[in-house]
Amino acid sequence: METSSLPAPAEDERTFALLAHVLMIVSSFIGPLVIYLVKRDSRFVAFHALQALFWQVAYTAITMVAGGFWFFTFFTAVQASKSKGPPPPMFFAGFFLFWIVIMAAWMVTLVLGIVYGIRASKGEWAAYPVVGRWARRLAGV
Image (tube, rainbow, N blue to C red; front, side, top):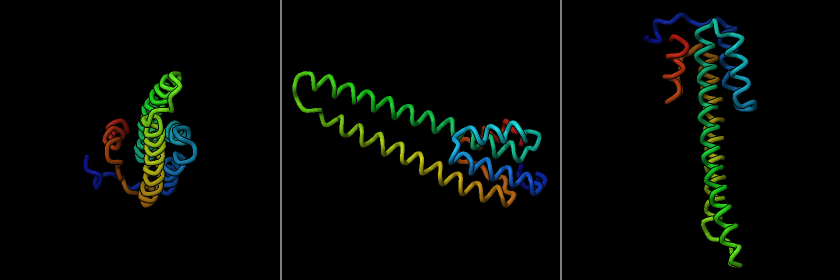
């Protein structure tokens, strides 16, 4: 459905959509989930809250994969240290990569929350790059 044919959202809908994006920065999935459950009758609010919620699910998956990788390198280092040698370089590289991935994903979350929060407050039906299509489909937009 073309977004130009959709009705303009009311002021309270724009505020709730803004809150869904901004609250995901500080409350992870809880803020967008509460807003979605409270205002799911509004397609505009549901669309924006679902985007923030889906992004938080993706963010959690990214951090879990990065954490799994780091634990793998940690246990590899522990196993290598049993032979009384220094930890392998892979341990330090894994730790560094873990924090780089976590910080990069958090920065993306921060930028998405701010940029799409501003766009939602202007009444735009702006969609996140990947999860926006899923939210659009589920919200009936």
